[in-house]
Length: 188
Image (tube, rainbow, N blue to C red; front, side, top):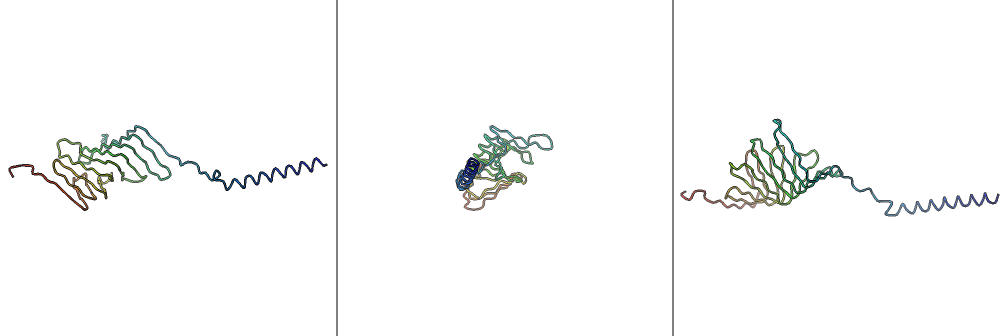
């Protein structure tokens, strides 16, 4: 009978020790660790192509890395080059260090050494450079609230804030506008 009471005492002691061990670990930082954030898809050296109704390439996006952030529902792009055609079939090229595409959005946000220019050699070739630029793909509008430079041939305009309608080729600078325009014909 004595061995039964000793066994019961040992079982109670083990249970009590286990309870104390578990209750003390609830306050440890190890028990509060959250699982790492889960990313969605990721691509390296990616090329994504969107075609128009006619089957021709409308947008070709190339990026060194594409990473979907599930927590924020944003797709991040690194070292981006986007070739696209406006509705009038003018080819354009946009390059940037980084890009972001929020889910359910038609606006792509670019950042770092952003350049956008026409690839049509028969037209005047505007060049827009900025540290940040948003492109509304549905309306074909490029915009920024930061410093921007706009160059077309020998004409240069800089300012802060820009809206450029790619379809209609209309530029609107918001503030602090400075321009340099050279005569095209020396006889005028």
